[in-house]
Image (cartoon, rainbow, N blue to C red; front, side, top):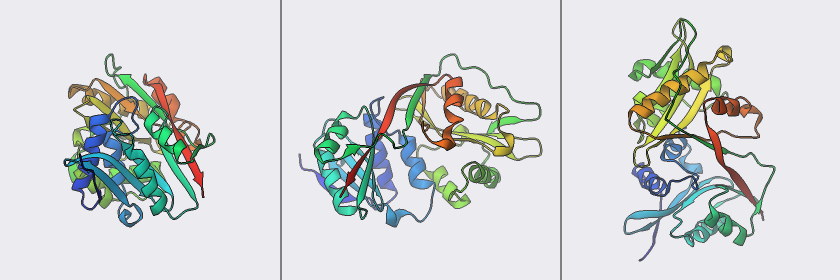
Length: 292
């Protein structure tokens, strides 16, 4: 079957990339459909620095590569077509402008690890590692909040500025804006009923948990989660995650996943939070490097 190679040109191409993620998702795959919706839409004006190519057969994407210039690649290749990984890496080498090339994959993506090693990449054991964690949605505890605090989903445009202000405070410095968050909200499979916040006395948003629901695989991903600095150590992150997970389970989900970073100083509180929520690690990422 002939393979067609074409650039990402319109937002609808994101759905084609997500379709590959949906079809191939497992505990041996790096990307959930929510990763792509969030990462592609959370910032504005970055498309010129993100060349992206799609490999298609009979109108269905079988592989894609997404470069963050000058020298970082994300890729997804159908395990049924592992040879396409060589093509993606060759395109990346021709597209990147940096002397040092970086590619991150999940340690279980054996077909990608093999392609990287064939291309001369080596595993950088000092790089930050994403920890892939999951939990069944059976037996969820109920959320508990301090007096005067409320957990609830977003309520349209009226909540948007406070929601963005919270994100920017949690992830300072952040390029997320009201307009970029509108793009996030417009992206499939965003659902407002899975975009949860904790509202503090006085009306400020103190914590948030956004869940992305993959109905096909019956799994939701938490991305992003955060608590404003002034409200930390009060159990709000735990409470907002549990509230969002209950909403996810009500839709028919069976599992939730989350991907914190293990060896980054900004993630020190994340792993204890998710472990306390019942998430357990099942895989880690590896970053491979090629010096040229």
